[in-house]
Length: 190
Length: 178
Image (cartoon, rainbow over all chains, first blue to last red; front, side):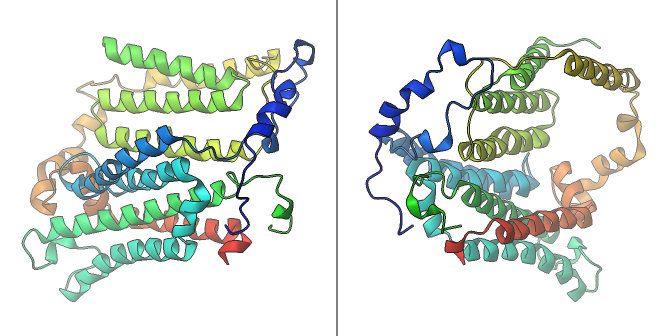
């Protein structure tokens, strides 16, 4: 992130590559690659997108958590809710650039998050042994609606696993997209 | 089997976006058409009263998969020289053969909403519908089956997602994340 170019030259790709962008009719048919990645502008800051994402992101995150928690009573569950919650990070990445967002969430944190989700599932599963049951026997938990709450905890664990994995995949695939690809030090970066 | 108007419209939309995804030369347009196809599938699931599957399809198929495709294609070159793929005779024949082969199995399926279909008459699904609430305390039968009755399978699924995520972190990790 430190080697990110401060002033991204936004005008030069549009000006210099316009002959390449508008393919002349003579070139059609041979499948010529007319838009290589290093000619496209990198991340473009857009006030509209940033404002929209700022407004919607809390609602999307709330919806994701709702779907995760409410899977026991309505359509939804951990897988769906986890994906919706991860969409918040994806939207933030599109609005503010993937690298700056990724700088806040390191991969170790994501790995810990994913591990804690699976750990919650396993803990609920093994916890039934403590009450004389067998693996994943939710009905034995001695609290009111114990089975329902343990199922919801499991759903939450699944949701954390899914959202962590999707966020990590998004960062890993997206890292470098919004950095100028013609930057000289990308070669020794790999 | 009689198609209701919304289902027919969604099927038509799906057919069109599937053809567009296959025929468009522009990769970004193809990805968007594919997302539209996934959205059509999600709408179809919700019309067929499977909201859980519809939610999954909308979130994963139409949402995240599209984003990941776009990110991947953003790192490569995009061909924009022609509007549509050229269709050769051999590939057209192959497509027709696959469609005929798969389509030949369709009449073997029970009609949508057929009351004599095995899934409606089967003992197992009726048992879940009758006992899911008393045994698990969960009103959504899908969740009851997924986590309650088939919890071990779901644990396996979560473990697969977990393993895939960890493997991805190890394989795709860049130097700055070390």
